Image (tube, rainbow, N blue to C red; front, side):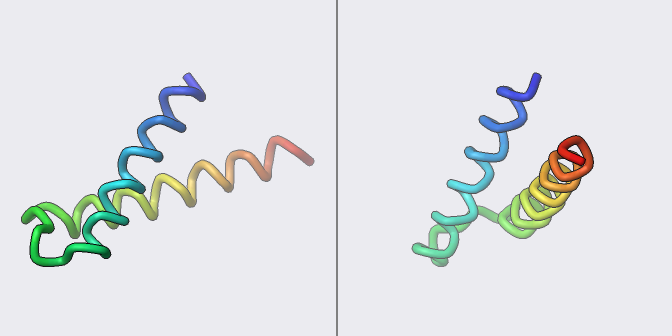
Length: 53
């Protein structure tokens, strides 16, 4: 399960980076992808930090 989450975050991160490098080619759903990526990373890091204590 953790591997699927990492792959999903990697793909979303690649889309975010592509949107930053080539803004004219960003799809209409780019804002949603940015928000989803930010929330996903926040949840992933928060979960990781609480498990390490």
